[in-house]
Length: 99
Image 1: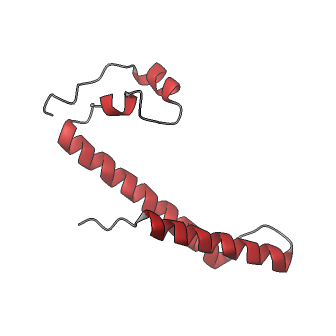
Image 2: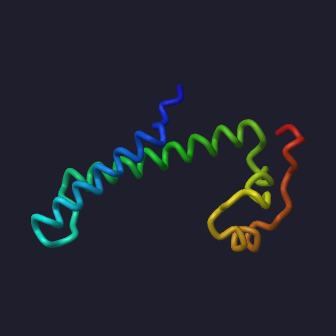
C-alpha cells in the first residue's frame, strides 16, 4: 500500500512548521523549536527516511541490488556524485538485464 504524502501535503506541513518557528521567534526573540514543533519535525524526517528505504527496497527487487546505472546517468542528480563514483566506481549492471 502506498501511503506517501503528496508534494502539496509535505509543503503545507513545512509551511506550518515555518510559521510556528516565526511565531516562536516573534514571541521569544530566539530561534528555537518548541517541543511540539520539534516532534513534528522529527516525525517528518522519520517518514521521509522510511519512504526512501521503501523506494530503495522496491528498486532493488525490480532491478537488482547492485544496479546503480540509473543514478549515474548524466540527467540524474545525486549529491556528491563524483565522490560516489570514486568510492563505488562507474561499473554497474545495465537496466536491460533482469535481476
